[in-house]
Length: 251
Ligand SMILES: *[C@@H]1O[C@H](CO)[C@@H](O)[C@H](O)[C@H]1NC(C)=O
Ligand SMILES: *[C@@H]1O[C@H](CO)[C@@H](O)[C@H](O)[C@H]1NC(C)=O
Image 1 (cartoon, rainbow, N blue to C red):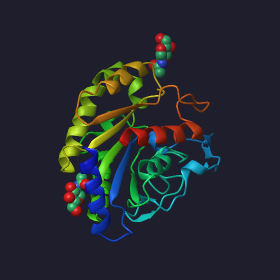
Image 2: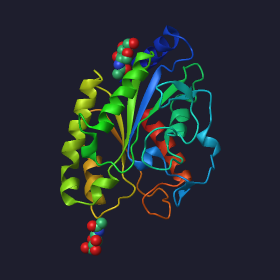
Image 3: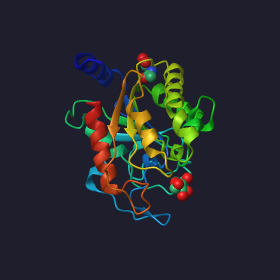
Image 4: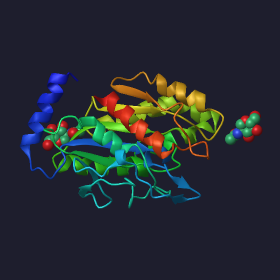
């Protein structure tokens, strides 16, 4: 989308409905690293929130009751993520997206990650997929335009070669169905290329992510970002950096 068109859209959006409902919506989905495991050690979050992770009055989140509230860490708290929630990339991303233009309206984050999911668990009709659609539609109904999906997933697809080989096709199908169901054929996808995996096929999944071959997918490479001792999850500092990189990619 051109910058002029985007600005026009945002300017229009900021005058069209009440101030309290975010009008620029970002969906966040995937597995544990989008949920956020920064600062989680031995199933306990250390409670440390860096200044880059807010709270910030310009960033709201859709909670488990489908209501807007000021976003604070852990961003996925109250949602059924299947894991102890820690620091993720969402809030630094949200602050970074429109942070340098205070005239733009508040943005709304829709955290929807589910830990331990494979890409096949996000195909149309699955529980995770349906929940993502329900939350996206609720955010849209309250006046929001869905600007992008932030997608960080694939660690669970690195164990079996068959899953790694199927990653590209399953991802493309997921995006195709999501765009159709949200009636948003050009929905921007900010896809994170894996920093880690739990099996031996991480590089295969990364290659699929780096070359998805579908339009309006922007890849942000997480390789090299600092990991927790489990060698799978990004640290708090790494999540902040990732959030900033994702915001750069969107702008
Ligand atoms: C959300 O709702 C508005 C109407 O209020 C619509 O114009 C927009 O395209 C919808 N969909 C998305 C994906 O934002
Ligand atoms: C990865 O490969 C090594 C060496 O072949 C093997 O011992 C190990 O079990 C594999 N790991 C997984 C998770 O399959």
